[in-house]
Image (cartoon, rainbow, N blue to C red; front, top):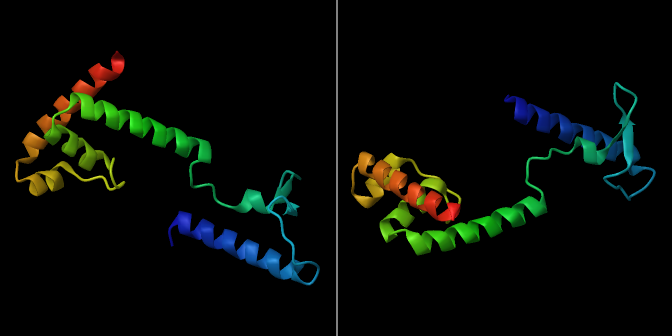
Length: 131
């Protein structure tokens, strides 16, 4: 079992044990409720036990905003093929990042040509963003 999965299983088990132990007392459970004490004597809450794998809402909004700005710059300074290569390479449309080989196969060109297109497009964007 992977360490990440193992951690999630332990967390899920702790939550389940806590829910079972408090079920007889109350149906209301809050993330800020204390569920125990850690080795240093600090109070532990349900919120502390939940994994924090996702970005905060503020980070998500900032990322979306920056992506919109980037896409506008891409439309302004890149040729269509350059834009397509960057969108596929960095998952800017659907989140799926493709390898240069996968892009080459999709576009019917060589991997080295995809590499040159990517490098040239990134330089154009870098130059545009510097302004």
